[in-house]
Each structure stands twice: as structure tokens, then as C-alpha cells.
Image 1 (cartoon, rainbow, N blue to C red):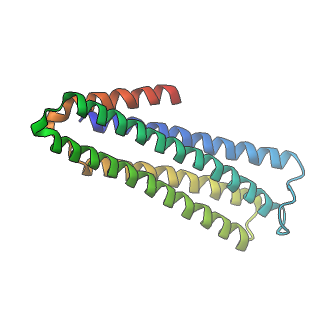
Image 2: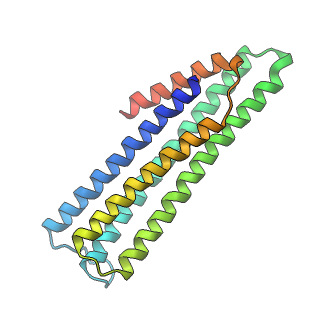
Image 3: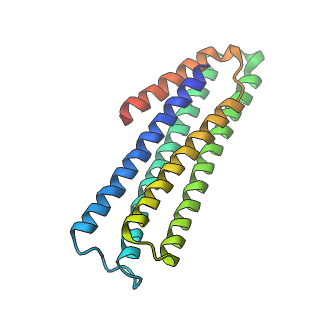
Length: 190
């Protein structure tokens, strides 16, 4: 149960980061609208130029989010391994190591799924912006909607992974360490 709470806090952090992404997109749009409306990227018109700028910003922020997620995974794994080596007895060492491997695999799966979803969404945005003749308002609205959908997908994937991972009752000490680590990361992120 403690691991579920800790992972839900990680989900909250990811949602906060995605909200910041939406705010950055809106700010970029306002700057582009206040200026000339184009930054001279390509020859596809002002709308395409704005979309390219927004997509670049989204990609950069997503890369930062993925790096932070990987760092969080590494920190969690290190904490779990340290606690295992301190508390476990020789007879139950194999069980603890297997549990640690399950945690690592689950975390890596979450990161990979998030990266794949983000890449697909970015490609779709570029494709739509290239072939469509939507006006600027509709185009920006569709971008914001896509980002919100990405947030929902990420939350659902993380929750499903957490529910699938079965945590034995004897891992209470390890769960407290994991929760404490994630709480610290959450406070730093906020």
C-alpha cells in the first residue's frame, strides 16, 4: 500500500510538469501572436512556424521530464537495494533481489511507455500541422487538447503498472524507504 501511495505522488509530479508544459505552450503562442507571428522556420506559412516552435518546446521539456524520471528510478532502485542489503537475512536474500528486479522492470516499463507516447504525439502534431489548413485558433486548441490527452494517458499507464505490481507484506520497511524517497522528490519538485 505504501508503494502505491508513493507512485501516486510521482504521478502528481508528472501531472504538474505537464501543466507547466501547457503553460509554456500558451506563453509561446502569446509571444508569437504579439510579434510577427512567424520565426521564419521553413516555407509553410506562419501557422506551421508557430507549431514547429511549440513542438520544439514540448520536445525539450519532455526530454527533461524523461531524464528526471530516469533519475527518480535510479534513486528508488538504489534506496531499495541499500535497504535490502541492510535488513535482509541470508535465507531471504534471493526473494528481496527478485522483488527489486520487479520494481526496476516496472519503472523502466513506465519510462519507455511515456517516451513512446510522447514521440507518437509529437509526430502526429507535426503531420497534422503540415497537411491541415486550420486557422491559428483551432490549431493551438488542438495542441493543448493533445497535451491534456498525453497527461491522462501517462496517469492511466502509471496507475495500471502500480496495480499490477504485487507488493508482499514483509516489504514494509522497504516501502517506507521508497515512500520517503518519493516524498522528498515531490517536495523538491514542488
